[in-house]
Amino acid sequence: MSKIAHNFSSGSHPSSSGIPPLSLLNQSFRFLGRGFQSFVFISDDEEYVLKLFSNRYQRQIQLFSFLSRTPLLTQWAVKKLLNVRSKLDASFISYQLAWDEMPDQTALVYMHLSPSSDLPHTLTLIDPLHISHTIDPNNYAFLVQKKVDLAYPALQHWIHTNQIQKAQSALSSLIELFIRKWRQAIADHDPLIRTNYGFLGTEAIQIDTGPLSKQEKPDPPEVFKKELQRVTTSLKNWLTQNAPDLVSYLDQELEERLSSKDDQALP
Image 1 (cartoon, one colour):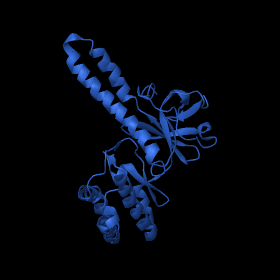
Image 2: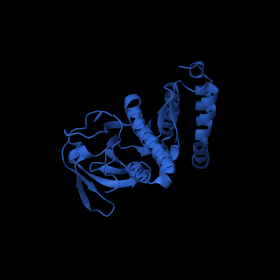
Image 3: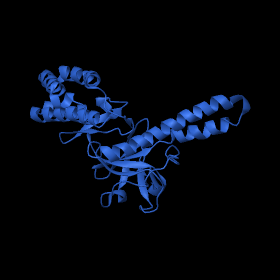
Image 4: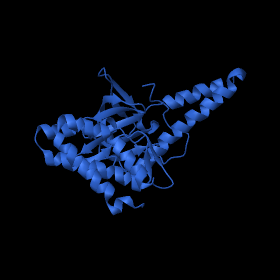
């Protein structure tokens, strides 16, 4: 619990974005896992995921702020302090960018980036030891997403149940998501399909909303094409082992989309 306390950014952000689904925050949330930037909980009805942001950057800021007052460490600590603050600000900018430009593609339903007073004042979390903890969500930074199936397990299910058309639709949607981000000049600094992408039905969803940034303009088509080929390499390797026929389908989709005049032209 100490790792999610005081987890707001010092930057200026709207207190909240979106409207929480009716009675969403009246449910309890069970610990599901953790990533670099957040602790993840799933709702009782298993329809929503709550991500409470880790305060690792905030704790580092406190430490380096203290060390910067030590004469022998001042220069080193100030440099560290600026670097950590930059990472924290980039994370919150990424969350807001996901909400502003990709809410459907990230399955976001609610985001809370600044302190507020209009939410219910109690929220129950169930930790890995099945111990209940009550927090006031007004005092925490978090986001809520629809529950999404991770990309590889979803594809595996469709392959094993011979629902190949659904697998194909999902792969097409995944390629479309990457192209959409490129057209919007949204850079993704961690485009790992295995852990950061999934499907809601057969619609591709970017689960991780933390590694995004806005560029002045989209990369040139040839740069984007090379990057997309790189990003999908591990997916092709996985498909080769699990459903070789889908490799040719994915190659065909990439070839058609990357060679089309519409997708070669800059937005």
